[in-house]
Image (cartoon, rainbow, N blue to C red; front, top):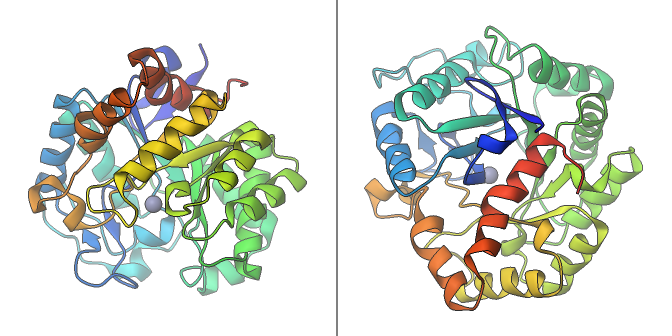
Length: 333
Ligand SMILES: [Zn+2]
């Protein structure tokens, strides 16, 4: 079976197991979400991942874009390393300390971690390094992360993203970012995973990626559950990309019942192969230690709701194991 790249090396897709497709471990979102948007505590995240493993989780995909790793790098003793954005961003990729900490965390917990490489969205893209580089030069750096390893490490990325649109349209900087991601995808066959929150901008993202020659099944459109438009989900599924419901958390903007309905209706419409699920943990208040659902909410609560609405266990397994395996390995379908 096709291999998937994790922080501890390539694994056979057959061993991927239950996989969360859109999460963040160490992250710095202080620019927009003051207060809870900084996670850099190694022992805290070790206990959160332990809980995920104990709930039956096997693999977690950390799609933290480069810009959100700057200034959020712990070391395995839990001590924050000073250095700040400038030191960390010299290579305009994931901070090396972030990559190393995720490797150490995977070894400590036994949870497999797959890393994304890429750039986020406006206003995070407004920095010199991004603006001074051509689309192809940005693509070259993504390919380096995917094929040789992140700067300063030999640890390789396993997919591209998350790559975002801030609003209901794709800004000029975001367009360049998407094109670079598309070109890196064409050179490596790595999946491109997107941030398309609140508005149905995932359709425009998909169209742009398709126009660059990316096959639809290499694209994961994210945050679809924050867009409460079932026709949008169906349209994406019909186009052949993955439709990801990835903000499954207690107290989310839309009721969990609505999310259950979205998932079940796509499956009953014949698109079980297109559905992906995750929590998008990105703030301390999302963690179990702070009263949130953490990385276990899907397995311990949301799955039960799906089963109660008539999904059978094999269908649940299909969307938590088989679909991530195909999305990450590049196996057709
Ligand atoms: Zn995210």
